[in-house]
Length: 397
Image 1 (cartoon, rainbow, N blue to C red):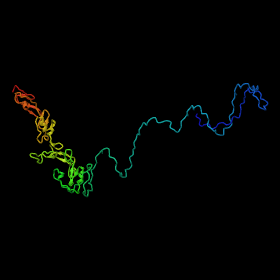
Image 2 (cartoon, rainbow, N blue to C red):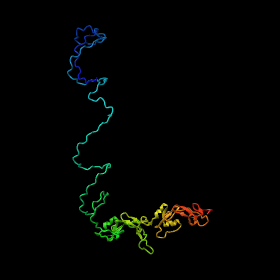
Image 3 (cartoon, rainbow, N blue to C red):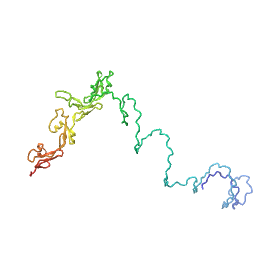
Image 4 (cartoon, helix red, strand yellow):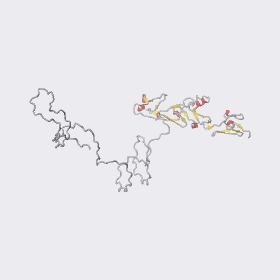
C-alpha cells in the first residue's frame, strides 16, 4: 500500500519505563565521598575501582511499552530523510465511475426500416426570394400545357434617342410588336465616299480635333497628315482621323499620259479601303496588300506554283520586264505531268513516231499515233499501233 499522508508529528517524549534488566558487569561499589578540591596534578594511573573493560553483551530485552500519549504539536521542520524505496505494488482496483473498456468493433447492422409517415400539411406561403444558383441537370419531362394568353401590356412610346453602346449579348426573345414608323435617315448611294470630297464645316478657328494627333495644323487651319517611310500619307480626312490603304499602279484609271491609263492609286482601283484598319478589301480575282496583282485560276489545282509573267518568261528564256503588267499579271508553272492554264490537264506519255514522222519532239501526244485522254492520262492509239504511248506498230491490220 502507498502511504496516504505524510508524517505530521515526531514524538517529543521518551518512554516512561526503563529496561528491567541491567548488565551484570557494572562496578560493585561507588565512592563514598566527593573530593573537596581539584587535584593539583593529573593521576598517574586509572583508579583501581573502575571497570577494566566494557560490558561484553548488550541488553537482551527491549522496552515493552509504548508512549502513553500522542504528541500535541506539529513538527517544526520537514523530515531530513526520504524513503529509501518506492512502493512495490499497484492499486488493486480502478475507479468505478469510468468505463472499463472501449468498443472493439463497428455496428454490424443498418436500420431495417424507413419512416412510414408523410408530411401532414403543405406550405402555406410562396418562397420570398429567388434561388441563387442554376440547376445542374435538365428537366425530366416537358410542360403539360402552353400559356393560355398573350402579354397584356405593350410599349406606349418609341425611344427618343439612339443607344450609346453596342449590346454585349444576343437577345433571348422576339419583339412583341412591329415598328409603327420608318427611320428618318436618308440612305446614301452605293459606292465608297472619299472623305476629303465631302464638305465639312469647322465650328472654331482651329484645326478640327487638333488633327487627331496624326498630323500638324498648317496655315488656313488645315491639317497636314503624317507620312510613312515610303513617303505616302498614313492618315487622311480633314482631321487626319482615317487610315489610308497601300498604293500601287491602277489596273485602269484616269489618263496619265499618252497610252497610260494606270495612275498611282489606292488599292490599285481594284478594291475598297477599310478606313478603320487601313487594309484593302480586294475584288474577286485580285490579290496583294494593294490588290496589285491578279490571282492564279483555281490556285493551279495544287499541281503547280503561281508566278508573275516576268518570272515565267525568265524561266522560259524570254524577257518580259518592260510592259506595265510584268509584275501584276500571274500564271501557273505546272508540275511535271500536268498542263493547262490551271494545271487541270494530265499529260499522256509520248515518244518518237514509230514511222519516223512528227512525235514528241514536235509537241505531239502519244508519239503522234494516238489521242490523249487528259482526264485519265491514257493514250487512245490509232488502228495499227499499240503501247502505253502508241510507240509500236502492229503487223496485222
